[in-house]
Image 1 (cartoon, rainbow, N blue to C red):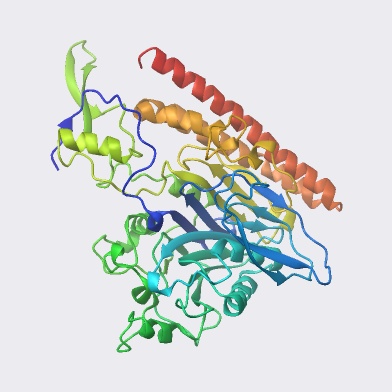
Image 2: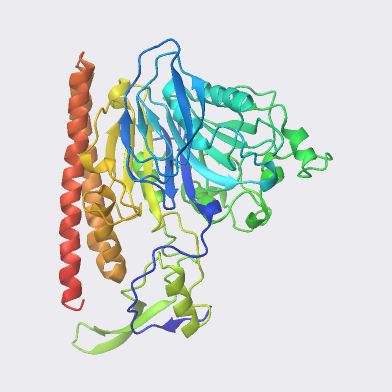
Length: 525
């Protein structure tokens, strides 16, 4: 690719790239307990797109005979917990038993029993969608978190609900983890004339890691291996009915239900990059026809490693979007003489929108080749869930959440025993500028930083890492305190206070970053 010198870029990057569609909207990384550094089971989710960012803790409910749960559609784009714009009630199901408290994100993600669920859309063939099915994926996640304490229970319950009430969504992958194991469940409709669904679930081996990025990843059906595999009975029948499999030869789930945009493979940049980062000894190449469902990492994986991977932009690789954006600068040698050097432009950033890319490519075709990086500027929120069986559930499960670009925002711990979140968490900010919404309390500095990312990056990432370290540094004392408490309400107050403290500290730090950047730009940077 021809390299050029860009002397000045003056446009603020457009935030959403035109190349992105709903099929490239989320990333989930999973880690088995023997693959992690401390025995944690990990799942994660980047909710990439303009989804709601408000979140609440929904309390547990006592058993009540005759209680009904209302199933809804249209909840992903509301502005606040009481906003019902575009929301439809589509039916009710019995909910007589007691339920668990859970963290109510756009795609509900963690309950009080250390059950966590990530998500990644792969859409699948449109011919399988039945919009009359009662359940969208986010509502299935909600019911599973309210009623289940293990991944296997969640998979079985979801299968029962789909069979009875119907699945009305496109192809989805949910990555379900508990204190001991993590599973990947992929689910589709059964066709427009059938209330039901097609699904397969595969367990990630305890010493393995796995990744899901908008492509079905489950391969060969293993019905004789119930410890590691579960699936519906109708898979091959539905695939043949809709011309997705000819009935000859080996049946491969991802091949039948994949769509042509993936070029006939079960991976793209993100899966390939993440597996290579965690298991470089296996030498995965981008021209391989298939990647394995999971891999054993070369070294054990820490929860902070997953956070770092969710920040990835392929910097320094052939897929680095900034590699051709250069400026010439004057350098001074030790003897006082000067020379000219070519460096990455201070205003180059890996989250350039389509308008900026088109402008640069108009000046010199081929300057920027779009790559779907792991971290994206259009992320609504993301989390890394860390589940630890050696600690009480209240403090053993942590959901490390952030809003906006996961490469730029700090992570705030929310615990299984958290009972109240900071006030700003209940405000969205996606549909309007809202200083009281936590999204904008971080987004302002993040977006300003991209104006001259090569100059702000060092300061910005130092803040990210400092506050991440600070959040981790207080955990041991908190865990010891909570372990010694017999009163759950008292323990909950300590957990709430810890979350509030990390939020308060990072919110103030990002306000300082914002002020620093305005000063920098006011001085002409």
